[in-house]
Image (cartoon, rainbow, N blue to C red; front, side, top):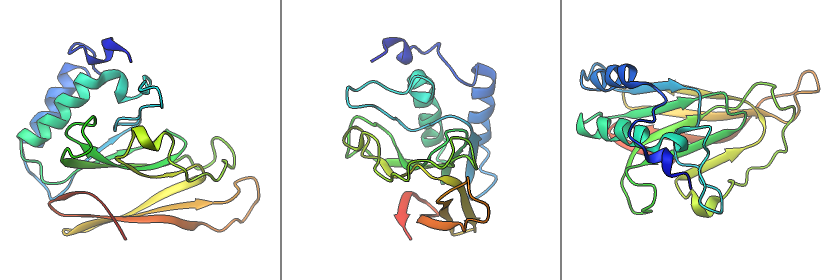
Length: 189
């Protein structure tokens, strides 16, 4: 564990951008509040309990302020879209990641790279699943997430190819989820 990750002064966004984001949540301009960003947002602890310090785990107080900010502002449908992780993940965002019965307060969809990292291993075993029960899906294949956004739901299809090193490979759907309006969290499609 890194105690500095809990310091209120540590921030990914900086205070001005964090305030801008929280002020935007309060406006309630749409059905979906989609936050696009590039590093893993949900907790991602390894088997020893250490977090991913290159992601929001290195800025836990900042993540907690943003999550509490959307709860306090009654954001109906917070969805974090993440890229640049080179693997696919789908996670329920929790009010308290240390408590498995804690309410789900949002959803994160992590898109893999198109080709970076080569073909990948093909593994779908969630890394350190016992310390990350909120992570519902993982894939180490290359591809994309196809989302369909409607007033009532977001449908997310995790699409991938078996090999990026061979021309013409067909994309297949590895897993599909739905996020329903007003009901944070992933539902199997």
